[in-house]
Length: 222
Image 1 (cartoon, rainbow, N blue to C red):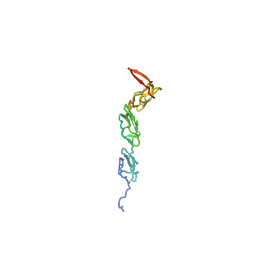
Image 2 (tube, rainbow, N blue to C red):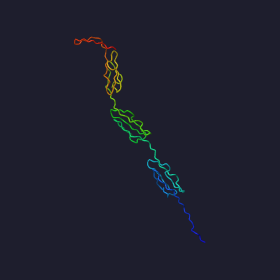
Image 3 (cartoon, rainbow, N blue to C red):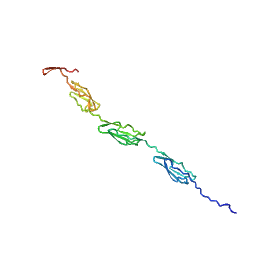
Image 4 (cartoon, helix red, strand yellow):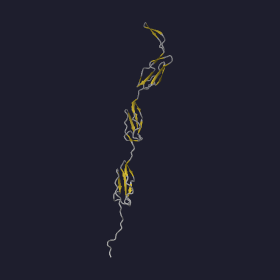
């Protein structure tokens, strides 16, 4: 007798894993096609600014499946930044005053000679992407007034020597003297509000003859 065919052979089965696609905003490398066999590996990576969520390497199993789900590329959460700052008029700036300054960065300001800073000298970039205050202002420094020292027969108190802008200089007379003029002067932008007063002794009643003309002088009542 004869067999009706040839004897069969046993051959090893080759099981392939399905092809993998690059993630959005990412790439793959290695054996990622539909020809991947058991033990083959496919590596994932993301573009700049994106982070991988999941495993970066997948391995093809003997059953024809990848051992894990394909990862995704998600946008990295960026720290907030602050906008650029301008230098104040009649002033200058220095430090991290540019666009994109990071949280905690600082920008410092100063004024030109003859000007004084109104506001914060240094601003700091906050976590909400804003600076912690407005840009300061450079204002012209107020001018002091000429010094006023003690007057004859009296004394001065306050800001008199030198005179300070928007401050008062007060006058008082010694005992026995009386004041003629304003008892207090205000310094404003380099000038006093009035002439300095004077202290005088009372004039006793007397007759003065000058060029055959008689004058009578009377003391000032206090």
